[in-house]
Image 1 (cartoon, rainbow, N blue to C red):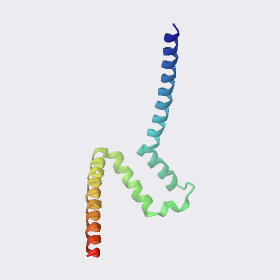
Image 2: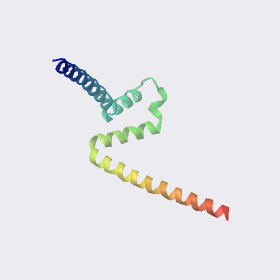
Image 3: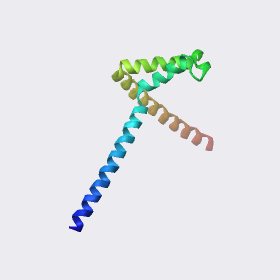
Length: 107
C-alpha cells in the first residue's frame, strides 16, 4: 500500500509539473506571435512611448515584413529557409577564404 501511495503522489507531482510547463509554453508561444509584434509596432507608430518611431524607416520596414508574414506565412517561412541556407553557405565560404588567406600569409 505504501508503494501505491508513493506512486500516486509522484503522479500528482508530475501532472502539476506538466501543467506548469504547459502554462509557460503557451505564454512563450504567445510572446512569439507575429500579431503581437504588429500590435506593439502599431502602438508605437500611433504615438506610443517612443515618439521617434513614427518616422523611423526601419519601423516601417518591420511593419511591412510583419504584414507579409501574417498574410503569407508559408512563403515567408520558405524565404527564411532559403536565406538561412544562403547565409550558411556564405559563412562557410568566408571561413575557407580566411583559412586560405592565413596560409598565404605564413608562406
